[in-house]
Image (cartoon, rainbow, N blue to C red; front, side, top):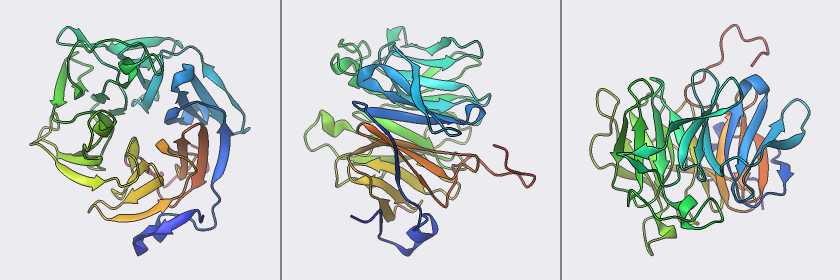
Length: 313
């Protein structure tokens, strides 16, 4: 099978046809939540069933265990200070790795009830933390600790770190999962993996327009893309507004208008991905039990190379 498959000519401006897909590591059970940490020149990702965080060192190519046990982490993001913000299935919380090396609870309850098992997270430019909270970490003991949902539903939340207020911003999805903002932060994209629990449930990414103040979504949202190969899980948006998403048949790239541009073929179902490297043009991909990487012609929304860039991250 070829590494790349185009469905629209725009696809070829985003990938490098001669760039090889590299398998950097294998040996996990179900790997997820990659995040690039510029200060460490490293990628950190979760091996959820093994309850460990892994670390890939870009300078040496070495892979090591970053932390074990870790509270069954899933998705990760960075805040404005470069700190890792994590979704913990086991701790049923959003936590943050402080400068002192300790994980601090950011939010673990909504209206006095414990969260289900936060899955994916994004930190908006205003510092607010947006995260999905499906039930996968409490459905069994495989990716967390089996328990009943105290909330009784799966929502997307916004947490304001200044006021400490946590608000349910999307309550209409069955199992909200991956999420990301458009480059101008006027659209919030959220995948719904409810087909894992509800037969025939749409396997889609939904687009939600934001309110003028950027603190909530306006309306019920609209379908953006539908998966015909397993599910959409985690995804990222590039500076041009294209969505790079996981799927059962590899990494799919959708234009902002919803057109499927093409696919990067990865062995096994892809769970998530992130942009990394000094120029942020290296796509790191978690798929089943492995970590892959490939260089591309794209960089993540919210990042721009300085005109004074001279090789530093």
